[in-house]
Length: 301
Image (cartoon, rainbow, N blue to C red):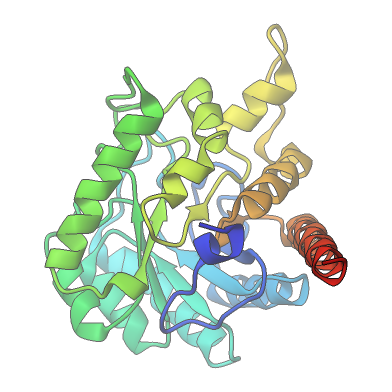
């Protein structure tokens, strides 16, 4: 499988000739990296449009923090936060993803103009989610998930993290397909930081080729996460604040793009947009060079 074919196309969404950039709009007071900055609807819409100006191909809108220890908001509050922002961005022509574990939120967001459902539970948190997405014919992100993180890092024990994440994702994808979601509308996400330690996240990033072997486009969501803080801190230092991890995030974005990821999900867009374009240019130069070498060999025969 080539990197380009591994990147894949997601039916129902635009097609990009490189790794796509998904910008994040957290309409929450308590997200780990930027909670409260975009809690107001007008500010959130303005921020989403700014992300597009900076190079985001699609914008992921979420109204519930999924950081370890976060308390869930009720459905009415999540709807109040999310739907006006989705509607505002979609009305401006933005390709919008909704980040939610609730079927009702997904359904109303799709009706308001969202085109992708990004469920960190892969449909496990709400049994109505898969039927709703299937009925809407929407693309669906299936993330590796082992449960809510209200108690911290839930069941983050692995004998072989890559093999176990792949096996569990495969089982979840099978359930999603059995529920009626079309195979060409399924995206997989290894769930970096969810029930995983820094070492687990790094090992998963080093084996993205095996995750691509699942046969579906791959979303990598590493932005500002704890494992980057651990890497930057070194063995003795204190991890830098989340907003000081954007250069490290861009580095991961370049690596993911080079490996064949379909998209990367980031808070700060501009550096990652540059990174994925450079990765695509290098990939194109390699392809052109190989084609020229093949043509030269053919001409010499």
